[in-house]
Image (cartoon, rainbow, N blue to C red; front, side, top):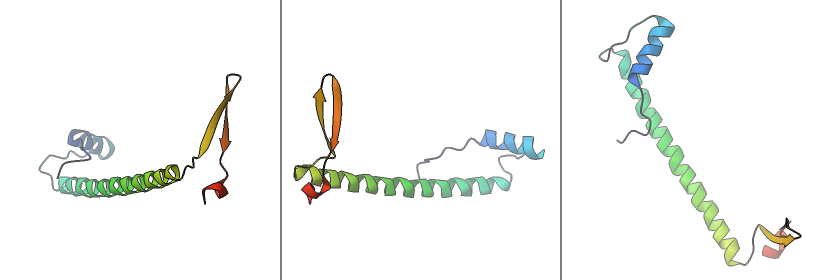
Length: 94
């Protein structure tokens, strides 16, 4: 599995030493929990990324549908160097 989250084990051991006054070595059993947490984080982040990609694809599909029907979210007109935006009437696109 390619790491999505790269944990800095030196920083973790330094933080544990600073906060709790205990030195963790790389072969310390507590490091098993660090590895387990890293794997869980990778899986959760992967799931979130996949869901975000699905949501973006869905939004892009809706936008393509609106564009194919000739509707847009807004149309811009320019007058005297000022750009004015007019929201479309949703009933026109139904």
